[in-house]
Image 1 (cartoon, rainbow, N blue to C red):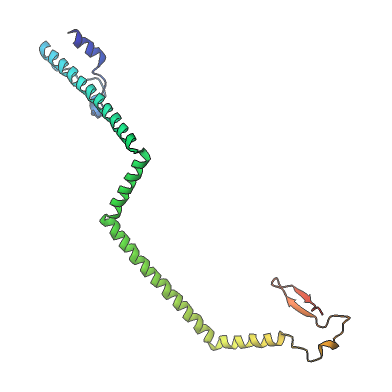
Image 2 (spheres, rainbow, N blue to C red; image 1 turned 30 degrees about the horizontal axis):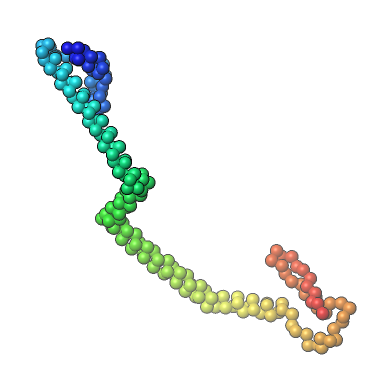
Length: 189
């Protein structure tokens, strides 16, 4: 009987276990059903027995976890290695899945179609530019630019290069800069 009293002091019944319904943990506990002293004693003994088994199982589990850690340490298995193995296995599982294969095939086909589409767009642009270049309006514009270029380019002098005046520049030419300003270019003798 002392064991029963001692056990009830060590393990109060009012501590809710993980997973108990919230309804049973809220409010005062319901009054125990009416039972005889003998039934009460049997339940107390069963309670101590179950708690003792739980304690024993917890100790066995802790010992097994320690043994597992020792074996892994001896084999050189580190948490990082385990993580890598788990990641590799998971990735392998993902890549062999039906959904992954279907998605991969779909994306591959989409990529091929996009490549073909971009190629067709490039060909269309090239053809259009060729059409524009061969158009009579562009040819006329090109001829006008060529004529203007010919008129602007200084012609080669027909005189003897030795007869040029050495006191001053033989030819002064204005060169247009990209910013719109002009500089004087004097050829050196």
